[in-house]
Structures are given as structure tokens and as C-alpha cells.
Length: 117
Image (cartoon, rainbow, N blue to C red; front, side, top):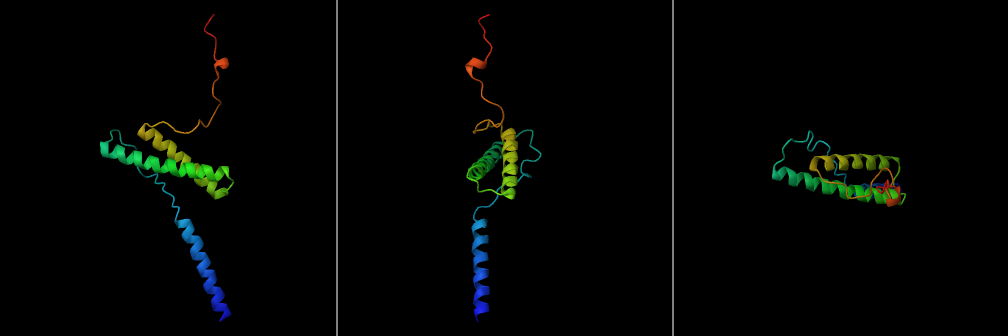
């Protein structure tokens, strides 16, 4: 009887942990808009922008989790995949990135060449 109870509890715990993970699905679909159409209809453009928004939302959540130290090696791999898909959708939709630049440092006025010569 105790063994049966222990087995049922183990199954219940596994079901809860799997259910919690399933509540936060990965929305990436790199097959969408691949290859990118040369001319997009207004409906295609709307769908692409909607998908881009979903990818951006997932990217923001993953970057937050990474900053808080919540991502392991597989989570970081997912973050790289999401970042790559976000950049691809930015190119397809022609939308600019909304976050800070990933590379380099911003130019300060003192770093610009002087035009007074």
C-alpha cells in the first residue's frame, strides 16, 4: 500500500512539473516566411509582424531569466535560437530592433571628428 502511494505521488509530482513547463511554450517556427517572400501581401505582413511580436516577447522573457541566472545551458541555447529568429524576422518585416545594440559602444560627441578645421 505504501509503495502504491509513493508511486502515485511520484507520478503526480512529475505531472505537475511537466505541466508547468508546458504552460510556457516555445513559439519559434523558423519555417515561417522561409524563404521570405519578395512581395508580401498586407495579410502576410500582418502575420509576420504578429509572429515577430511573439518572438520579441519570448526573447525579452528569456533575456530577463538569463539576467537573473535562471537559464542553464539548454536555456541559453534557446535564448540564442530566439535571438537569431528575432533578427531574421526584423530583416523580413523591415522592423528595427527595439532593444539596445548588441555590439560596440555608443558614440559620444567627444568621440566624433571635429568639423571646425
